[in-house]
Length: 636
Image 1 (cartoon, one colour):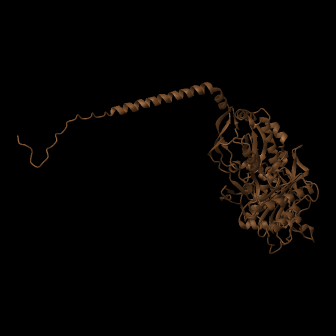
Image 2 (cartoon, rainbow, N blue to C red; image 1 turned 90 degrees about the vertical axis):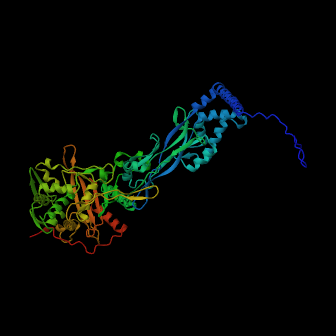
Image 3 (cartoon, one colour; image 1 turned 30 degrees about the vertical axis):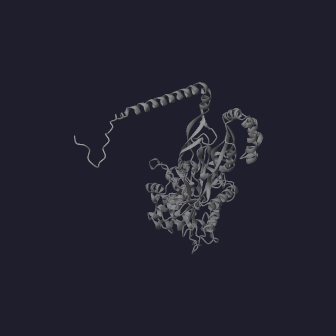
């Protein structure tokens, strides 16, 4: 064999060793599985121990705790909207308040447990004595007519009961001071409805108060616009979850973390009315004073905007304080201007005048030979003042309020046409003013008229209406023949201030503009006064206002005597409807008095006072020309 190469070292022979065995992956998996099993067994053992502990040793305590409380979903009341006049003055609004309450039985139980943990905290009696003293210190000895002195509060907290109210209508800031210091004194939301002007416009606004029996407890309308517009004012309720006493879901357990809001409440909208608070105040004062002065049983008046039909003021002599409405009787609570109906008397003669002018039957200076009486079917109707046959101008028929002349004209108009005009003037139907409690009045259906019916209706008897309807008739004459149904709500205002104007109702054409102006001019003679010849003086001269043209109509209607079902000869409805100024109408005023017995038994002086106020309040320019004195009775 050849030997090693020269010059190279000899190689060491390689040593041969056995290779190390490879680790198997399956071994690690088995270890992890074993560890996991051990952990699972441990967890199950721990859970079992806990279960034994809960069901065995702690079962009684946990059961008692579960019986004490439960999570209950309840509704959240929304903030109620306000009621405002046309200029934003508040007529009704809500003030947030709180009711303070406690759960004495639970308080005593929880204090006993705390006392076991810390015997140095003092007795339960000392605890509630401290609370009672602090309540008196914070609230004083009385809140909203409720006693909140230390002894009264301590007596309530000492009761063995699940709920006791400590005070209602508490200022939220003061309530927070108490509940922040003592977590086991609860605080419930309240809202106090406030009427800052007392009796002013109360027959319109109505009343509302906090109702605990409502679900959820909230302010609820009870009268007037407060109830008719309750849904709009009330808003939409929210939702929250609270901890309550088991078996009594009305009792919310006081303390932090006991309430969770789910959905916020949506505040109600506010109502902006057509009323002007200053005009309302003046009208209410004048109506109340004049009703007392004339010894009338009641009195009401309405002021309308001649163009829009908006109710600027509406007053009754009988009102109430909505802050204490429970003390008022039914007569004071109702809005007589729309809920009381009456026979209007001669104020209704405007229907005959308008129909005759519109149909071209007569002109203002047309002459009628008027007797002292007229027979209609089986009835004989006379003028109020006996007189022989005399020549009267058509204007004079209404200025002197001749029943005979009016019925003569109505017969020329015709029954069917006259019935149509009653409908156009809006009689026999509610005005849809937005005022609750409005009566429709009564107009006998045309197919039920008897022979004598047409002897009553044209002179304002045999039909009935409310004061707002009566005033609306003259609004049509003031507004160039278009009757705009009256309204009380001007706009809705959202909580964010967004204002949505309520569109006025569509007007109804009653007569032409020319006819309306002619009737206005004719009815100026009602208030004219002739110093030289009393026969040329109208029936309502005391309604005149120097410097202004006034158009209007007096009315005296016999009341029905309930004893005989016949017309009384001693009790009357006294009415007046007027347009001011007549040459440029801005206001329409309606007045009704129930049987005044003192003075000249006329509503004309009250109209004068109202017109005088309106001229100053709204700075009405004087008429360019004074009303002419026109002939009423022609003499040979």
